[in-house]
Length: 425
Image (cartoon, rainbow, N blue to C red; front, side, top):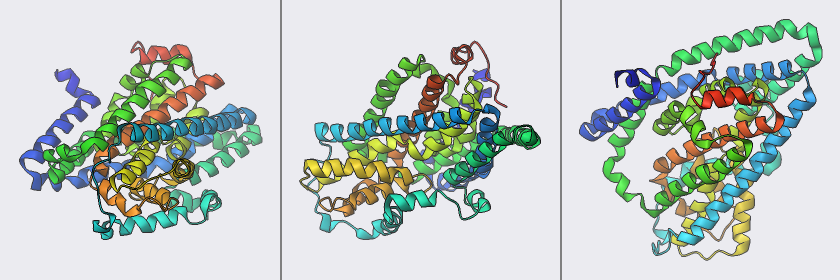
């Protein structure tokens, strides 16, 4: 047992239990621990833009074959759209099958509109200009601005251009490529230092949540939350498990390999908190830098599997709860709009509610004010969203790498089986 608690996973688990105990025993003190969780996430986010840049540039420059890099990107995007569509359809099917909102008989006029004001304004920003505006936002005002704001997609765009240019320079670009490779190793070392603080971050995040909402709040989540968790579990082990099996790997072994990162995400409800470590672990199991560097950062905005389940499930729930009849046209509209609005979700404050609001704006039949119903339970659903999204992106990276032959299968199986330690720097 002492050896178990010397591991990061053991320390994170201990922090989880201690956080729950503090939140239950001394809630006022527990709420004050929130800065521990916030600070940990800020420390991680601090190095993400530069780290993504270094990994992508080094991967592309080292790959040499720019056609292959482009092929990886196209295959990743196709995979994202197919799997995201499956997730959206799963949310619709489960909502109609189990009908979690039927019988609530909520009067939309009786709901407090003030609670939605901040989210509504962000929803307007998200949907204004449509797809063209979204694509324009991928281009940073300046290179420095992309790094300063921490916009991963903007950094990724510049990194791809920089990496391609470096590859085209050949030997003349070698000194720059070597410098960036060395810089990435330094950043991974920094990440290793920061990740040791994960137990403190987890303690602060979980203590605050239990202290503020109380353990009793778990009883008030209702069928919607239970159904969402069941949907995510089914998606991970059913859909993603099948995809992994077709690629020649086991979803169970992958989850065991990523257990430390999943524990941190469970407590912080933020997949950002482990992005650098996830990239390191995927590289450590034998996947090429260029594939990890392209698929993971892109997936954080374009491959939100659990998020997609949430959008369609919550939209139909609100319609059922407010006794709003919705047609097949409305359902197809929800599906189509969600494919677009979910792509701008990452990095938007209160992204789940904001994207849901943006989606419902396109379907006037469903009262957007019904979002107030899911606002109070959003944090609890956020745990499954973050975990499902992270697992989905890791599976996507493994699958795309398998398609392209960018994974050393012997190393991957040895690492996943526990027969070999991954090289994480």
